Image (cartoon, rainbow, N blue to C red; front, side, top):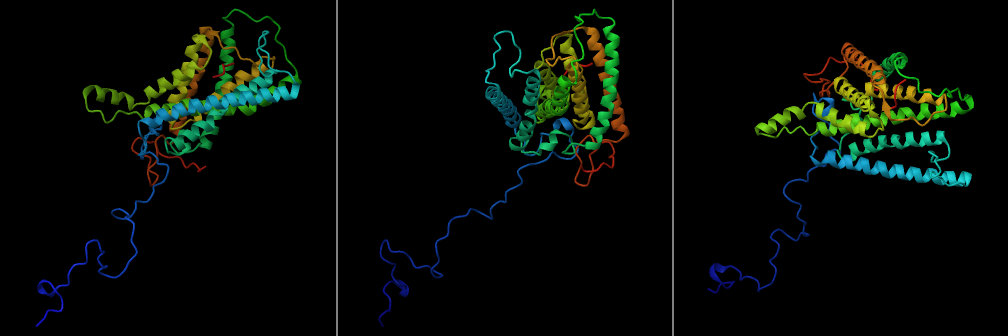
Length: 385
């Protein structure tokens, strides 16, 4: 009997060379290769530190990489300088349009915009622009909430800030009194030409000072006691296994490297010499130490704002808006440092009494083993430093 299909066991012969095989289960459109398993969902852009994290290590989140603090610091410097230059160009153009005169500093004039009040406004605003720059760097480059620069709660604790403002007013009163006592032991270098400039000149300067000094002081606190302190604090060296590495890790896990680096950088941007350098360094170190002891910048911001308000408003009353930053006698430094240390002691005592949060809370509100118990808080003559 003849086989219906040629070949062994009656199987049909294979198709000619190059011909496609028929689909075994019917025709289907070709599908693109999608990998093994379902696609991974994208996580949130920002990540927070683990529970129980102190303020100086807030930048060490699960997304932390060694290069993020370096890139963020460089971005803040470059962006800040670019904004300052742009603001200066705009201010000069406005002056030329308004007055028809170009700035001329070659004949001994110290003013750029032709008016000491305008110059003061520009100088304060040029520093204040660093505030949004630092907040943006935290979100964009470190991928964390900008509010983590302010406190372990991820925001400004307004009730605690207002409390610190009251203490800062007391600091100003004590500092002014101690400066009067110190001046009794110093030679009188005044020429006797200082006098009240009148309301017409004082009020515009006072408005500029009252509006811009809080922004300028807050910007410096966020940059030096927020960003820089946390950038250094993120470098814990905790993965080092050698003896030297473990020793350095034990030091870098403390806030002191960040306090020293931030205070040195803060001091370098001021023009004081001699004992004045010590005064500015102590101010920066006290503000940074308070940030680590209270879990946020509120006490430093209050101290900085009221110190600078006193430092600017007093000279403005006699027409001196260009604050001289030179040599400072040790008596004046002592008169400034002693009230500052008393302020720090009272702030730390009150923070313990009010049970201010000092480390990041846990998922259920547990702030960790190192935290103080929580307060039922709602969600929501000195030298210029």
